[in-house]
Amino acid sequence: MKNNSRLEKFYLGFMLAMMYLPIIVVIIYSFNSSRISSVWEGFSLKWYRELLRDKSMFDAAKNSIVLAVSSSILAAIIGTLAAVGMPNVNFRGKGVMEYISTLPIMIPEIILGMVFLTYFALIGLPFGMLTLVIAHTSFCIPYIYMLVKARLVGIDKSLAEAARDLGASEIRVFFDITLPLILPAILSGMLLSFAMSLDDVVISIFVTGVNTNTLPIKIYTQLKTGVTPKINALSTLMLGATLLIYLLSSWLGKQGYHKEN
Amino acid sequence: MIKKFFKCVRSLNLNCVSLLAILPLFAFTVMFVIGPLIYMLVLSFLQRGEVWGVVNRFTFKNYIDILEPVYLKTFIESFKLALTTTTIIVLVGYPFGYFMAKLDAKWKKRMMLLIFVPFWTSSLIRLYGWIIIFRANGLLDRVLMALNITDAPLKLLYTYPAVVVGMVYVLLPFMILAVYSSAEKLDWSLVEAARDLGANSLQAFMTITLKLTLPGLLSGVVLTFIPSMGLFFIADILGGNKVVLVGNLIQEQLMKAHNWPFAAALSVILMILTSLMIYIYRRISNVRELEGLI
Image 1 (tube, chains in turn purple, green):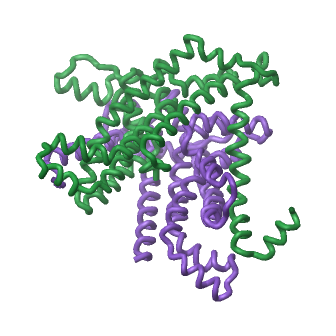
Image 2 (tube, helix red, strand yellow; image 1 turned 30 degrees about the vertical axis):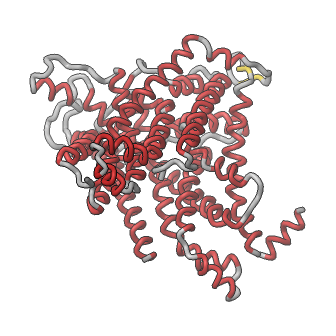
Image 3 (cartoon, chains in turn orange, red; image 1 turned 30 degrees about the horizontal axis):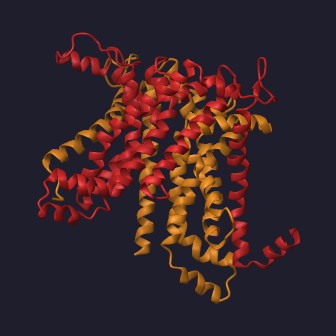
């Protein structure tokens, strides 16, 4: 009953192949020497060379990384503190507040982009890196909060109690007991945030300034106007980077799992 | 009050420290989640300025404007596309998640890895792959013509089907993961029991498996239906200007027409539709968190 038939296995394999098809196409064509992407004219690294010469691409890459790093760190601090503190406090509307703080990943991205654009204009924040970081932090916090919260449930409470009985202050308990135990969850949450931030185009388009481009914005505008195979090369490099982040995060997850057992 | 607060902080007992710990999230949420959402609501009742900006005068005009046939049509079109997309995703993704849950532990892990890699890579890059495939005289046209299936390029790029493929492609992993996470918990002995009691495999599936995986399926529907109303860049990239969704309309009103109050009204309506769906989902499935979200 529980075994997969051959047909089922074929289906799984076929669908996986379909999922990878566009990715593989992009990678293969990044090595194509022809300018027209539908014709194959032989292997070449010329688009990579051109990419490396493009200064605006470097700026966009730098912006993307600065943005992803700062918003995932900020979200990690805010999200972790809240997840650790929340079980110990009780106030009216706690559930509502928890719900509202996860809204940024529940509502359609376009609405989030729209409300940030109009709100930042209202309070007079200059559009650019600052507004990007705030917007990205808002949708990174829920990931960290939920992952850390889930991890806290699995932690033996008597450890913290023992430390308290031995006279440790709450700050000490946090840094010596709780933090090491939830660190894997924080790190994998940060990597998830990092990847989400690096990938975001919808919200970024709305809240960025005239001179602050990120890589996804750059790719988006190129896809809308005219594509050069440079985009293939850039995409391939970004694919490699995300794959690396992913492997790192699943390795971290495994580390946490082994420690527990 | 303030004195009491500082005394509490200095005493460093559990309650006070915890209160301090949730303060940043509280402040951030009030300033950058609740604030913007309230402003959206307020903005949707204001008038647009002559050329630029907003005039602080109360009006229902923005909501009345949505009822104009052009805009109403956009809502209906979006809804249709979201429905088409979600239906295809259910038909394709449910079996995938279900079959995946039947694999042995080693293969389950491998499949998870294999699904997560495309899920994690930029959706723009993956859509770009489809552009190369769909483009006139692109990969698909060439393969089809070489196999003598068609004799002229199909020119699929910038058509409705291309947008549907793009939507299904980007949102499918959400359904797979949602269905998988509930099928994984399924007690297979129940299915066996049903079979032993004389149910054929279809009956066993309908009465046991489908019923028990329904929460996953429903959360997959929510997770795919909601974004598909707003993913304007897919319609933009793969549909050219031919497919206009609520998302495109909002973006256009914000960035090109500079009619912010109208964009706000559109967003409010979209937000209400979204919340309604999540509410109905919660009533049906009795769970608080969307399964497979993380």
